[in-house]
Length: 262
Image (cartoon, helix red, strand yellow):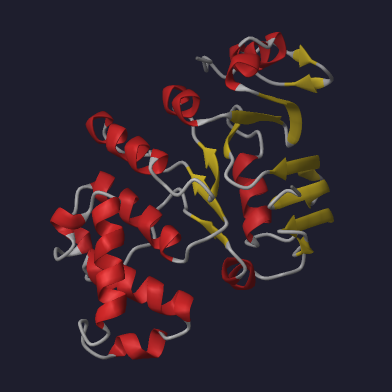
């Protein structure tokens, strides 16, 4: 089957700085893929290019076989590409139920109907409540978002992205800032997402990465260093060199990061 998401020779320059360097990437339907690399490797820039937040300097992006390189973010979202962000962008005064009803209404093109009191369109409300149940948010669905623990807010962000039933979901550090005691729940929710939905995870927590991913891409200085299975990645000497801060790896160079792999 053709890739559901693909890039060819993708470049992004900011003045004289190359943030994404000749990245060719293919994601299969239903993939569980992680994107890793030291700080400054270009992971978030790459995801911003995929989602339409940034426009590439050169190269091509395909979504389900269609060239979406110049499409804005909202058009890509409508075609089945959703994402979360490192910093949450939630409405603090809404409840999770109101938030998901609005997200589903927007996805269905009936957002103006949401301006009526919640409960008017029972089919959307019921679908929203079901999604919140599946994503472990049923117990807080009627509370103000601003009052929720941070881990629950991160789960709500995932729920918003899933509400549009995307073909591809980009998860940009979903566990960032979440207390250790709440991270397990995030992993459980991600693991339970529909099998046909392709997932790309950016995450610094290597325990989470290696429990989630069936395949990985390692970025260094904006370029692809290596791709492979978790066992191939963890045993690749080039990857270990990069994470341990050694200077010259297959034409890449990296200052010491102090990070550890695995």
